[in-house]
Amino acid sequence: MAGTGLNILVIDEDPARAALLEGALVEAGYTHVVTLRTTANLHQRIVAIEPDVIIIDLQNPDRDTLENMFQVSRSVKKPIAMFVDQSDDDAIRRAVEAGVSAYVVDGLKKDRVRPIVEVAVTRFESFSQLLRERDEARTALADIKRINRAKGLLMQYRGITEEEAYSMMRRTAMQQSRKIVDIADSIITAFELDAGLLGDRHHA
Image (cartoon, rainbow, N blue to C red; front, side, top):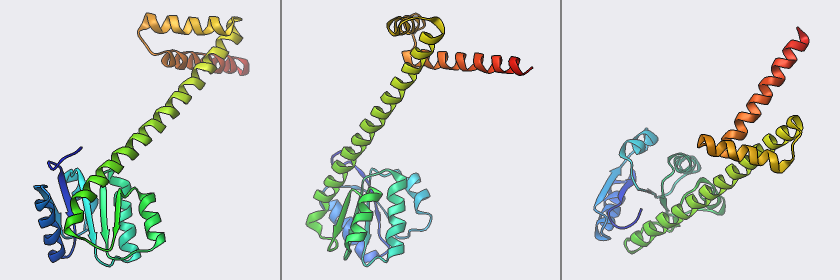
């Protein structure tokens, strides 16, 4: 996601300000610009437009308006640059928490548009990469826990060593062209099913 070929969505209820922003974007080389002058059904309209970047221009936003825009930021998962004429520390903090990529106080200036769009895209991509790495680390940790549990079950019920249990799982994974964590899940499920059946018979 880079360059001036981005599809940009402008959200501004003031026609004069919207026209100013559109002109600044075109001057900066962004030619694919769509403008919304109402926030009604905003989420659905954003989904339909599928923009690469969203620019929200708010003159003097009240707390409810800001929170509505922050909810949009949380839900659409796009780079968002938000221009406001005035703000406070709490609003800035909530903007960061909501995932707004660039929160610009002091209003809109033509010469700031392109660098702010670029910053918004770069920050969004960096943050998305961090989230992906976090999710991958969590998945890897969960996989290790399931593999260790399956090894423990094999060691307990087959009377084998940890190395033998792991070798058995790895060999089965290779033979079946499956991931070792999938083999671990199958082992866990099989032992849980056996335990359940034995429990049912015990109570019969």
